[in-house]
Amino acid sequence: MSIATRAERSFLRMALGHPAFVIGCALSSFFIALALISFVWTPFDPTKLSIPTKLQTPSLSHWFGTDHFGRDMFSMIMVGARVSIAVAFVAVGIGMLLGVPLGLYAAARRGSFIDELIMRGNDLVFAFPSLLLAIMITAVFGPGAINAIIAIGIFNIPVFARLSRGAALSLWTRDFILAARVAGKGAVRISAEHILPNIANLLIVQGTIQFSLAILAEAALAYVGLGAQPPLPSWGRMLADAQTLISLAPQMALFPGFAIIITVLGLNLMGDGLRDLFDPKLRRER
Amino acid sequence: MTAYLLRRFLSLSLSLVAASLVIFLVMEVVPGDPASFMLGINADPGALAALRLQMGLDEPLPLRYITWVAGLLQGDFGVSYTYRVPVSELISERVMISLPLTLYALALSTLIAFPAGIIAAARRNSAADLSVMGATQLGVAIPNFWFAMILVLIFAINLRWFSAGGFPGWDAGFGPALKALTLPAIALALPQASILARVMRSSLIDTLDEDFMRTARAKGLSRSQALWRHALRNALIPVLTIIGLQFSFLLAGGIIIENVFYLPGLGRLVFQAITQRDLIVVRSVVILLVFAVIVVTFLVDLAYAAADPRLRRQRR
Image 1 (tube, rainbow over the protein chains, first blue to last red):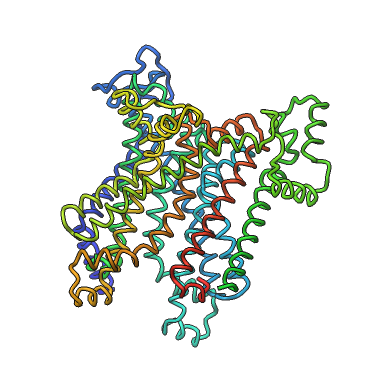
Image 2 (cartoon, rainbow over the protein chains, first blue to last red; image 1 turned 120 degrees about the vertical axis):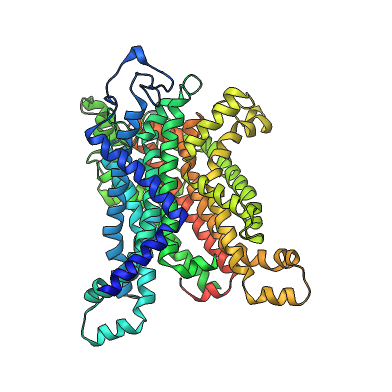
């Protein structure tokens, strides 16, 4: 017990001494906080139209200005953060929940027909960029946040399946797995009790990176009208609205863009930081 | 080598068949009756019957699939419901914009990434390395369609160097057409160049630490001679794979960028088709792009195997 806490404390000290990780955490938690606060408070009602105050530049009352319908941009960005983060979170969750067991199963039955089938299926999904998947899904089911989640989620499955299979394969040759097999544990128990905890670090790092990619994908889908639908504000659609007015009101394009960039940058820095912290060897080499 | 080629070719054909099956199931079977889906609930029964006949919906499913694939093999994608022209005509016009745009962006991305990655690797931990790494960190975080809008704001609206959108057509001459594709290609290339520069850097750093580099230095080559003659060639293999993968990202990313610049390419076509519920056009564009991705990945694998004979013997 005392060993674990000492290890935890030293990990925390290392984490706090890693500037990229600290900055990344700060940036991402800022937007997560904005999203959470938006449930109880926003400066203005983000869906309320107010034509007399349209296209205002940033001021003390409207921090980021207003859009072409007079809606408060800062409030819209707060609620938009909620949509982006929720879509990305669920999509990456789907990818992990389906992809990791598939990858672990393929590794446990390596070389078998099932392994081959899982991996070829993954290759097939990889051939459909998430945007094309979303186009197919929307063409048939119509646009919406749920369909965006499905499209991005499906795209994430092979990412996690491949990662966990590769990592699990190298673990299966290790002595402690042999010991577990000698102790009579089956493939499922070994995968859950010994393989999964040992690849958790890798999964967390990849999860952070996929999360940032999902935020970018959600924004792109919303921008072309395939994501969350009005009146729910979303960063991508705010940019689509801004496009025709960009010479009149550049702030309409700038602020949602900054929100996306800062969130993605924060998550990427956090992911890089986590990778360094989990694998100190890599850190010294690079 | 022949056995390897044969095996790879078989797996390519299987991938193509599987992809076409997936698209067929999603676009033809999931909506129930595609004809009434396309025409809406208040459709005229006569028009519905005509569309059902045109799409061959009264045939059994396996026969419909085979007819569709046989048509595809002969370049017959069917007739667009909204445009009333063969889809192959629509596509061949638009590919002449989307494909050059993708290749232009791929060239730009390589031109930016190679020098940046090489400088960063050669002067590891220097100010140049840190700035390249910082720039790439930012580059992967910027959504390309937002970057495209900012490019329009600066170079089209304020400086008036480029037009804000549209395409004059290749008939207007190579120069004006290329100029219209320049801002879109830059917007498309930026995130890919960032990724490529990082891959180039880390691949080159790995190679610089290899034993044969020490041998090259020991036989009297200077650091930069050794880098150009020996390290670069070996570092290029993973970089080439990434370039191949980027082709598919650029092709898909182009769909969005075309919308920013109002370029009449495949992207505009597919989004218009979605709003018009023209499933015949949507499925044709999707299958074309997916096939392009699968074939390019296949070609990259072959190039990889040609460059590194060890890979021919291993499976993965």
